[in-house]
Length: 307
Image 1 (tube, one colour):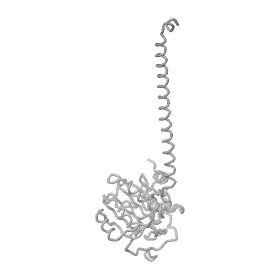
Image 2 (spheres, helix red, strand yellow):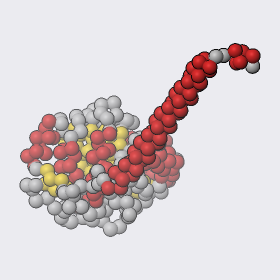
Image 3 (cartoon, rainbow, N blue to C red):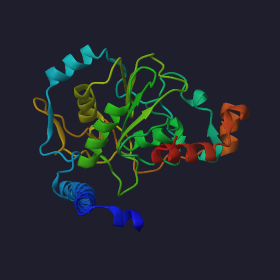
Image 4 (cartoon, rainbow, N blue to C red):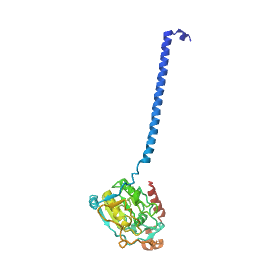
């Protein structure tokens, strides 16, 4: 108090000015911090609203505005450039009996030649169709049933190619009529890696329809579209084949229609389901395994994108 009394009027006025400046500076700093915070909050709100509006009005990238057209000349040139080789053409294996997953034969005993197979015996169950592609290998013994229903499977060797482009291509076609989700027949475009035992030709890509197999050194969408246009559903020879969505994918210069029934009779009767004891007698007990969990769980995990 004594010290304050000793301050002159001039000193007190100077101290007061300094105190006012300090308070003004603090007020300005607080106002600036508040402005920055409010601007950040506004920016976040605008961004969130913008994303919501964009997602609400943007078209689904998988929905086509018009049909995909492919020419026979372009397809032939693309097949040559991609190093494609036809291994089997509308020539299915003679046997197509069904077996329960609980008595599934070793695939090496029922698919002895071209792998992945294009036809042959298979489980009563189909592989549940993942319309945006599988991240893991599905079981050949169940996916062959999908081929019987007219599906097309495009397998890839993950050591030679990235499956992302293949999966996106299949997703677009499935979103535009090729993915039969309602009937649960498994008739769709399936895409999946194939590592065990590996594509038998040594190539990177394996196109499969019932009775038809074509392997290529690389994936090409023109090649893939042409294969589907000639082999999917009623265009192919699957005994239980389903419709072909003609409004989605067509040749521009070829009149490709449904396969006549005399060339591929549609078999309305289910093939015989062979009991486990008969399979053991025919193939040997060591070649028949209890694979229910392996097949069903493996295919479901692949469909869910796990792993």
